Image 1: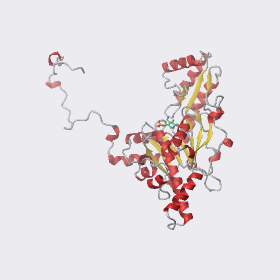
Image 2: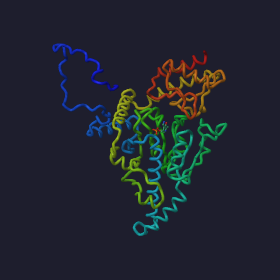
Image 3: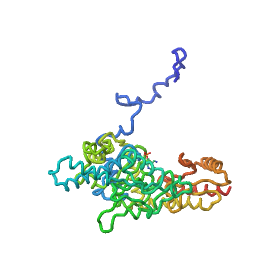
Image 4: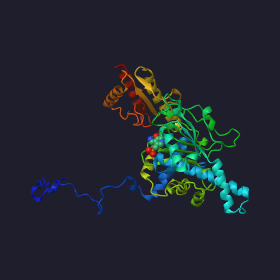
Length: 429
Ligand code: PMP
């Protein structure tokens, strides 16, 4: 309030008679602080329980074994995981090469210089990380790997933009027969659902499946930030999955990494900073090192525990709604997407769906409004009328424009029905 001099202060209302006054509130002598963060209100002793329950519920819901996979609550969002995935899996590759070199040269016998020389040679001739670029987010992850590791080690498996008319737009997944995979890459990376471009892998890429004879297969990493918990995934095909919580799991503030335990001690330890320095490879910040986060059950540094609590509540609700796991939610997600795409397809004169039919996302439905020929005007009108009906958040990402219906799990079937009806009515009007 504006400061007022004592003379200009308004008179206080008269006090009510004593008999009608409410009884004095009993409260502690400590005054409540003006603002307490929700995370602070969760007692430290409760934090492990919140974490462990969320981990167990995630494993039940996605149907993977907690014996084989570790769940890590990370900070730095999906973008932080672009870096974390690279650091940790390159570290794992170096550790494996280190062990192989020591074995080759005879453990203990070889001097350090010989080991380093052999390792440098292996890095020069064999270190590769593979990126499948199908949209804006996998492009960002690819660029981050180039920035941190050095472009000479980063292999572009395919760039989906080359399939568009002008070579600039995403919208298709290149045929696997055209992918240029490295031999024995430290990992192969892809983004399962491209949030900005509306491109989703219809299923796990055949070419990346583990070999049938059980002799392994590529080390696969996937960003599932915008479609996790919406469909069944073959978790055992991945070495690492990660996702920001803010789409289908909970609130902003945490990201989750599901990591195969064979990348952690006692099977494998990350190389020491001293060794990485000698090899001129990047040293990960400690908060991005999975081994450290796993050892501390995600409590190495101050975790945004309230966000984990929310994620845990979402998982409990999902498990109560779909006791058989993610298949129930998948059926709803498919139905919702079907309704919206069908409404768009019914009016080719009014709408143009952005991605190719073979790669359409069920979570982010991207389209242009072409009704009347002036796309700008038509989209403005579409957004204005939809907002008036409380159909909000439909504007496409600023980098690509157009319309994007984000069809996350929190959107009920009735929401998708309402949007489909509006799409139809707008086209007819
Ligand atoms: N990957 C995908 C698929 C995303 O949709 C996003 C964000 N929308 C990110 C990564 C980056 O996540 P963050 O903003 O949490 O860094």
